[in-house]
Image 1 (cartoon, each protein chain N blue to C red):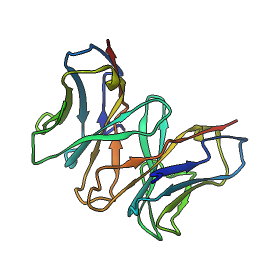
Image 2: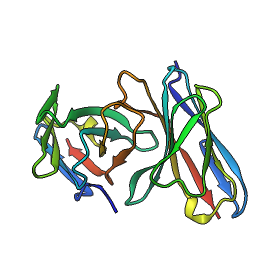
Image 3: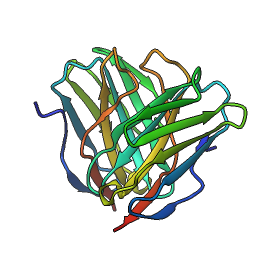
Image 4: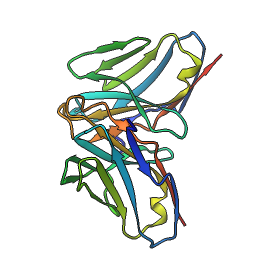
Length: 113
Length: 114
């Protein structure tokens, strides 16, 4: 049981480049989330999904898109990366019954130069 | 505007003593509160939660207290152990049914000195 995994672990992008971060969970959780963590800011919700095929905006959605085509995967896309998107990105998932107990992945450290 | 605030960026405590981490919130619609613990280079892990209908929840060495009138919650760790050294985040949510937004504080770095 791998839990929540994130790919890649590290990435350096140039301004304007695009990339997709992959989050996968093998716990059959309904809900999935993408957060970013910046110094002095805590974790801020980017987008979330309450089920396969559904997504919703969080606190800081601008510049990101997401897709949840399969229940176990939640993809975060950056179409045109900006230096302001330099951050550590965390994915999380929760089961319906214990919706408050988020299981987090190890994070992806992204640097945009 | 930060809806969940942790005003102490760091805290040092001697092993065996009590650690008290504080959290304040501004949104009176929050009705579920959580604490997460994070080690370096790892994702946060869930620690303990409390619903707004309670004022205290205990799990082993960890107790969370909620003061709704003051919009304040605190996490007590007794006794503190060196393995408790980590960053602690409090979080809050408006709805107790899931799939809703969680708002996190900025974290408090706890160091337990052996």
